[in-house]
Amino acid sequence: MKMNQFKTALVIMLFVPLFSLGQSSPMDKLFDKYAGKDGFTSVNISSEMFKLAAGMSAAGDSVKTKELNEIVSQLTGMKILVYTPGEATGTKVDFLKEIEKNMPLKDYSELMTVMEKESKVRFLTKSGSNNKISEMLMIANDGKETVLMSFTGLIDLETIGKLSKSMNMKGMDSLEALDKKK
Image (tube, rainbow, N blue to C red; front, side, top):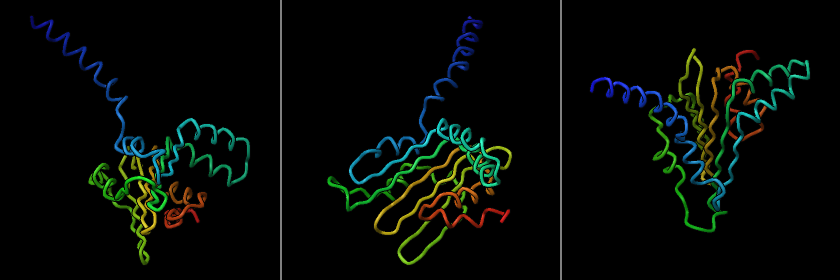
């Protein structure tokens, strides 16, 4: 009887990791809930797109091309949700409250907050291995729209600074100070 229990436990231990691979992160769940809904703009860049971009940039030999390849090689995904209430035709959503309710923000460390007049931009990071970041969130609100952006991978802070330079996106310019190689 003990051998059967052992075999059952062994089978369970082997298959549990497979089930957890299919589980969505809180960002994935929030993205799935709101992507394509009225008032929301959504962008999902997969790891395959980053690999494609890395392959295309590998052909060049300029310093900028090498930096771009270094950035892209560390990223496995990027998701963006932008909520603009004025564009919504249905029920209004307090998207900031939705983020706080659905994202485990206590699992993140605050990297930086930038506040100007009526706008607030927060950068939060989740630790990964080897002193790198496994995820970085940007949560921005200016009273007119709310933006939630998630970068995933194994990313160092210097790369985030370089990434902010290459993206012409509201709020990201605040991270340029993280690029230590200026």
